[in-house]
Image 1 (cartoon, rainbow, N blue to C red):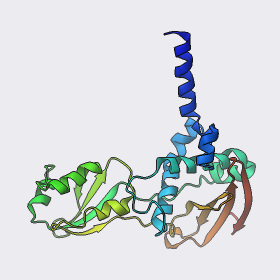
Image 2 (image 1 turned 90 degrees about the horizontal axis):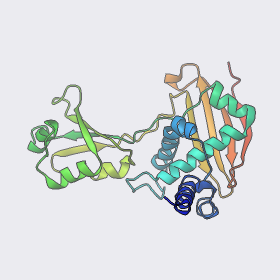
Image 3 (image 1 turned 30 degrees about the vertical axis):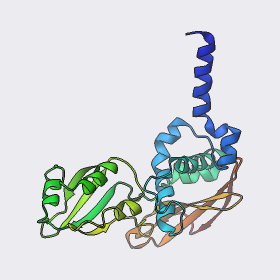
Length: 252
């Protein structure tokens, strides 16, 4: 390969992998911040959960009815988390390293369905066979539902769980199953169980910054946590991060 071609390949690779530094990308997505591969491996699913929670909790979210989860939006969250991780000193040490605060896990792969247990389509599905209904099988294939599990007590308790190998916004995915005669109910399981969880990260967006709320609770947390403390950070369009304040109960 000629040196010129090597340089072109290298330059293309660099622009793809450092797109958050590219001025055009920054103008298009002002909160696109860089992160390391190690940070990606540790916190990608936290970023995914934070982004999904935004969609699930906001009935007016612009992506509420889009089944694909916007990967660029998830990476935006990841970059903002990294800006806090690297740029806010002792406060970052507290929330990331000492308390290991993580995002609340939310459902992006499971769908719970109440079915007509005698239906031939459902019997075939549970036997790992095509249901025979082309529209239904097309939805199963589109959303990569490659595992089916009957509920404990099935068929007396007539629910099954579909499990996808990919992450989705489950609100519109659930809606795709509602018009079949052998489907009686669909639960997207999109509730974010913040109450009862002792750690969570929530994001709110302003026109001039993004705010991240790291929260840590303790003391009878299955009942809602008796004590709780928050750390508030802001990330600006230039990827500068700022620790704003901490409030709540004193740590034990």
